Length: 90
Image (cartoon, rainbow, N blue to C red; front, side, top):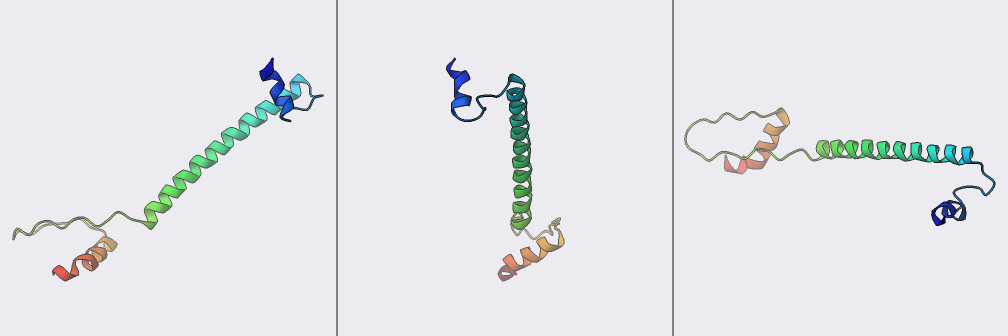
């Protein structure tokens, strides 16, 4: 009985509402909740993508000098960052 009274006391339902109106209101609230959850998930994915674009991964570690040539697979901006970072060792 108590659980049935709380929605009325908290103003969720009007006192003169019918069962059909309450069911429709409950369904609308569930749909809103689902929509908000999807929006939050999309926002979280967008934030992670933006963070990855803003803060790219660090450059690869330079291998130990062994006298043998080493091939590194780097993209253009990674090469520039690598040269800026390790230019004092060249």
